[in-house]
Image (cartoon, helix red, strand yellow):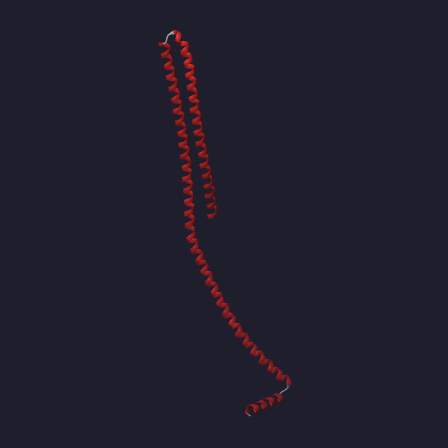
Length: 199
């Protein structure tokens, strides 16, 4: 009953004022309510914006810290790998130089041995010829010449056979060296690639 009475009083008051004042009053109330809600919403938005800004700043700091940490970890590793690659290149260079020096020395030794053998054989043959010529009679010189020609031919064939065998060995040695160089070249290519990728 009391609520009905209040409602009636409100209606009577509403009827007592002009429609313009009534609508102005209603509009002012709505505007005030809207302003309050807008201010409340704006406050919430500002609070959320401040929070987002704080979180973003925190994440930026964390990202910067992590990047610095990774850089401090990666830089020594890159330097270590670079030094290792440089060392490996130096080792390969020294190894190649050593192998070629060994090959050069070996070839020189073989040719020197061959030269000494040839010189010895010819000296022995020359000494033998001198001895035979002095010791043999005049009528045996022809037979000696024939035997000497046959012996020289046989020695020449043996010598040529030895030369051919040595040539085959040297050819095989060069083939092996070229194969090793091919492998070393491939290894150098891989190391260079890794070096430039790591950079």
